[in-house]
Image 1 (cartoon, one colour):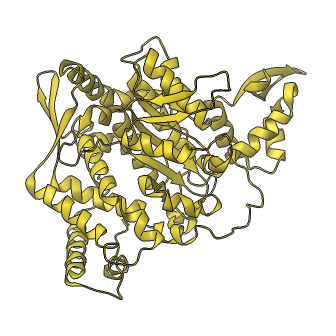
Image 2 (image 1 turned 135 degrees about the horizontal axis):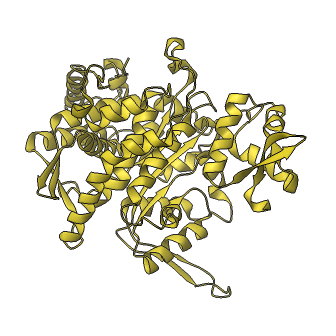
Image 3 (image 1 turned 135 degrees about the vertical axis):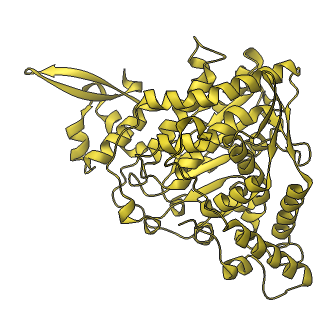
Length: 475
């Protein structure tokens, strides 16, 4: 069942102590929007459809059919690939925006299969790079930033811009909560402002002491296109008040799915989605990416326009006004501050949904423009509402001391355990003996291998083969 806020929830957005006529108008608009969005289901039906006639989103849902990950997690994977690989070439003059998304999947470990979604998304995105660098996989991994200090990320982006003329990057940390916790460390000073600059594609510079051996200034040029697709455990363990006041949280969508949001009847036995099937799906995207890139070069690096009709533009602007009305002349709250960028997220999701429906105008082998319809707007509103179902509770928990997880089978924790084994490495049975279920161990180990933190070798002992895992730093 798709979540849509009821009338009471919509009115709670506003400060009810000081109602004005304008705010009443905003209530009426959002209530009208809610009713309109209920006229058709969000999740596209894929049964009894000829595969040749399926839209991109329907083909993706078919690919993910065996996964019981939350619907929002699945679709965030597709929308991020579109935002990163295709959105880089597009621009909306009316709003002055590019459709780069900052998305975070948040839940308890294992049960929601976040790493599965991240793996599928990464493979699809990797495939879209191969048309430009068919013999250079390093380019993808250089631009796919999984971890690093502020200085390290700055150095990498600066070097790739100067040497490779690369202006497209993805932040894909599998333990984003850990990264948030480290924002205040001496190695990560400036990370919040760096993420803000990357979100808006603005120039960034960091001035260092001249007493060091390195360059005294690190710079990122304007026009850098960056997206974020990360995972983390439950947000109450990581979020701090300053993330709200600095504007970090309003620039990203943290989709927190709780165990109470899951239904027992939706459970599916875990099945690994093969790379062959994922690559087959990616062919649907590669054609659009190649033509978007060729169009961009044909236009001499001029971005392709995103067109929106006047009625839909008016709907976007009314939505932005309604959200702005929560703070103008009113008392501010952390929840209201985080909501202020919802209209931007709405536009970016609408673009990705439109591309998934192949809303493109072609001119032979080039793309004239992309376009957003009222249907895309409504679908984006529904999807954003679904992603933000638990946001009010998430924000209310910020700053509250939460007890540490009793047994944390997280990636960083397991990685440290394997690293302690040094040259001896750790077997699968030893991992399970740490108190991790076999199913969880497989998912955690696969993610650590895919992020190049560990590797595995088959060792033959007493006629039996045993898989041993080692920290890559120890090899």
